[in-house]
Image (cartoon, rainbow over all chains, first blue to last red; front, side):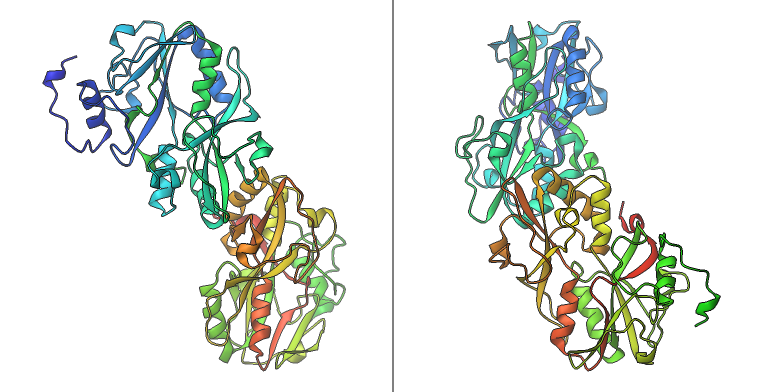
Length: 270
Length: 270
């Protein structure tokens, strides 16, 4: 890639293109949280074509945890609808390469791993709805505390498709009642980034025994006057892919997302 | 009124006009629940013009408990936008006439009480959103049990206006989490009939000490796997009017509502 022909990265990385070019030049190799405010970030999953059809069917059957924002043509690392000059081989800060279910590399570029039979999926992520919640003045404790959201495997089974099956993983955000009601309204407008919550109130009803011990992420306290609000989580497809032990797969490294040219608000239904 | 010129009431009272004419002819003097399915029913409040401005201001400041569907011109018993041939002096099954805050009559017709200085308000009621919830398959326990919804005075103060002030009264419907989330989505589309809930979860946070002892209506149990969902209630303006002790007022008798020509779905924002 003619990286040296690109303009220098803007210090603030104001939009998706700036973030992708910074990643492409190797200047950005960490997480993307807070970069390019207002632009949609997505989870990446790349699978061989033989598995891609099954995975797409899995996503279609489980749209809340697996909302598809874009799919490449087989063999193409590009999804033009998601970004100008987008190249999935270089444009994420860091990747994970999996073989037979085992992590084998965590490179900042996957040009050397690309194959003509690969299909790339970009799935919506909670950053978009969290942006909308914060724009509306709803506080998010994990953001205030500078930690990750807490996530749990639940007793809710995803609808299986071929080799892909497993439990839904959810994230939890504690909220006061008025904020929970408003958050349901807001996130209902965003079906492409997990949409409305899948549960509120009683964690044990979805198989969560202990809110103080998440399966992924960090512990965030639920106060006496709050309700735990649970959304389907993008870790679900990652866990499902890992469980399927594909002979080959590539994902984004945790927190190092694809930043697109889409505005968060453009994903709102209304 | 040329009542004898009207066609006979249809046995099933299929629409608002049929219900109003049956009431006008004196053939319907009881509650309107279940009549004219799909048509909007409304609460009635009639006040002297000197008080009407303050009451309208109160409604404007408290749209969730007091959503105004229509207001008559001073001295007119008609609100043409709400129904063909509508005459508020005759078209409700039963009324309550108040003097200095005391109930003085419960007639089936108020032609003899009408004055040139009266202003009529029709306010949205929960029947409309309950219809939308049931159409969506959400069970309502008080409907299944054939009793009234439970209602409570809360610690939420309405925004006062002139002589009108007091606590918000809410109704509670117990729901499983998925139904509660869906109910928030559906009722958010209906701001003219109380809109989204005002609270979910913890009753004591809105001043409700005992869910088994409603201030109005009947007790409906909340099961272990359910969440209490609270909506602003049309009893609020009735209680506020009673507390203001106007020298004269007329309201509908409990359950004997105005049935309009509006379709419930026409009140949906989307």
